[in-house]
Structure formats: C-alpha cells, structure tokens
Length: 498
Ligand code: GLN
Image (tube, rainbow, N blue to C red):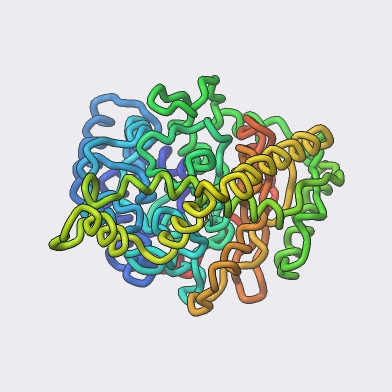
C-alpha cells in the first residue's frame, strides 16, 4: 500500500489488528519516505532505523502471540528535547552534539509501553528557543506545504515530519507556543496540555514553570491517542499532578456518537478583542472569524471576554522565560555534558569558551537577558514585577472563564513566513503574542486547521481551556473536525508518493 502515511492512528491500529499490514511493513514505509524525502525538509536530526526495525519485528511477534495492545507497532517520533536511552539527544544544539542519554524521559517510556515505535529524533530550535526552527545547529526545517517557508518553532521538526507524512504523530514541547504555532503553520492539530498533566522528567528544561510536553497529529483524535499514554502523575516530576486521567479516546468516541447537527449547543465560546488586534494578518483574521461563525451555526454561543493586553503578556514572558533559561542552562559548563572546548587554559577559560562555542546566538541572547533580569540590582524591577503581572494574567483568565467554557482566537498573527525573511529577534518574539499567555497561566490549549490562505498556506484556530479541561478541548476540536475537512488536506510533500 503506498498511502499508509495518510491513515489516521485509529486506521493504522485497525489495519494492524486486521492484518492488512504488519508493523514491519508500516515502519519500512515511513522509513522509506524519510530516506527519499527528508532531504528536502530536514525534519529529523537522528533517524533511528535499526532500533525501529527491531521494535517493529518484536511488535509483529508479540501481536502474533496474542498481545492485544491497540497501538502495538504504530510508528511515531520524538522532538529531540526528550532524553532517549542509548540514542543521541541534542536539543538542537552543538552543546549536546554528542550527548547519549543514560535514561529515557518518562513520556518516552510510557509511549513505548503503549506499543508505539520511535523512528527517531526531530529537529527543533536550539534549546526550544525560537519560533521558526532557524536557530537549530542542525539547520533550518522547511515547511512541507511550501519548502520556501518556515515550519514554525520551536517544535518545527515535529510539525514538519507529521505534515510530510514521515510519521503519523509526534511529540513536542510548548513553553510559549512551540506546539501550537508550528501546528498552525503546518496545517496540523497540536495540543499543549494543562501544566502538570504530563511529566517533564527527562525533557531538557528551558523555562521549567512554563514547559509542557504535548502532541502533534493531523486530527484531534490522533492527538488523543498519543496524549493518552503521556498523561498522568510521575513521582519523578514534582510539578506533575496526581489526578485521574480521563480516557480521552473513549470520550471522543462518545461525543461523536451522542450529537446531532447542533453538537455545540450549550457551549459558550469567549472571544476577546485583545486577540484580534494590530498586526493580525487579514486572511488569518477572516478564516478565524469564519470558523467562529461555523461554531455558532453548529450551536455554540459567542460571548465577549477580556484578557490581559497581549503586549504586556509578551513582555512578561520575555522576562521570565529567559530568567529561568539562564538558570537552567548553567549546567552546560563543558564539564558535565556534551561540548567541551579544545585545550582550555584554565577553569574559567573552559567555562567561557565551551559555552561561547557550544551555544548559538539566540541561546546566548536569552542567557544574557535572563542573567540581567536576575542580577542583584535589577531583580525587583524586572523579575519580581514580571511575576506579579503573571498573577494578573492568571486572574484575568479566571474572570473570563466565569463567562465562557473556552476562549477562541488565532494561534499566530500570520501564516508561515518565508525562510529568507530572517526576522530580527523582536519581530520574531511578536509572533508569539497569542500563545504565551496560556503558558504563563498553566492552561491547556489546542491549535487546529481552520482554512488556507490564497497562497495555499494553513491557518490555525486556537482554543484555550480552563485548567484540566484538556478533554473538553479535544472533544470540541474533534467535533469541529467532523463538520470540516481542513485537517484532511495533505501538504505537497505528503502528496508525494515514493
Ligand atoms: N517562541 C517562544 C520562545 O522562543 C516559545 C518557544 C517554546 O514554546 N519552546 O521562547
């Protein structure tokens, strides 16, 4: 079968169960596509073909001897921020160009135990800092819808690989939008769960109070299949919360079976004018407003809500995230992990040159900003103040959620921009304006395709939920996808057969 890469996770699981194809055939199909087509996209840093083939063979044997795990033998891949035992984990950086982790991240282990097979590690902005995947030491990633465009970032490799049909689903991490914005640029569904829902153990830290692992798929249903084994308490991550995990996959099935032609009746969707402000591309705005109208036609009520001015949120984020990053990245000192400079003269020279040569310019910029914000003379003026504003952002959301069930807005102010644009840092930071408040407040949010520009680029609609409403977001996106077909469209690369 040459179109196996266009099947959903549910279809792949059914096909494996009914012996239409084996995991070995499936794995070979995806590996073949990666080998033939990823030269154009650059979505993988490491293709772990040997281990994937072994795991596929083992999955086929286990299935033959009665193992009934539904996802046994379904391929996927991980953002290269997740530690994988025995396999290179670079975080997109020269600093970790030779780092082989001695252990698996909790989610890597849980996903494998659910039966998935990892095909390798996906490209990303260095240490997850960026919005266009151009800061990777391993080169820029190209958007499979249009190879001259960026895929978004920082999880650009995860988004591009999924949109190119190299994997059905992939993991990502989202500190300020790094799942939702690339999902929007690549025509995918991307889910950032509630902070604490998914373990961060073994996920290389950028800004620990904001970082959260999540999923990429073509549909909300595909995301639910991957989120299911990821979600849950992990005693090794003190910020992971011990709270029952709903059966997301079952909830989607039930929701689909129980609705008629007004699936959203009773659902209140909040719309904030702050999310439709200056800088919003008119085509993006039109598609998002059209999607809101569709939700209304399908029974939802639109209510006006207010959230904190996104410009204030942006400034808060770009104070706190670099502050946490500067502290987290101090562990990369040329002694304990990865890159070490040649012939250091003394200890100070070892630290200075290892860090100057090992980190790229964007990471160095963040470390400088963060160190400045945390320095004795400026701590209260910048860091403490930003923490106070963070509280206000959360309170504004709390007020908004008294009026509505979910908030809808664009995921990003523009569609995917050109790889040649070489945005200055501040312009790039402005592109995060609609995603970062969610991380500052620890909320769940999902981005889903809601149309295409005249140039054929995908546009994303973002739904933001209250804490622990991850299931509501998935169901709302899933029902929307029963009434629309944007998520079924294939990128130029996914259409290429081999
Ligand atoms: N673009 C944002 C930043 O560079 C968000 C990155 C992320 O979510 N990892 O900080």
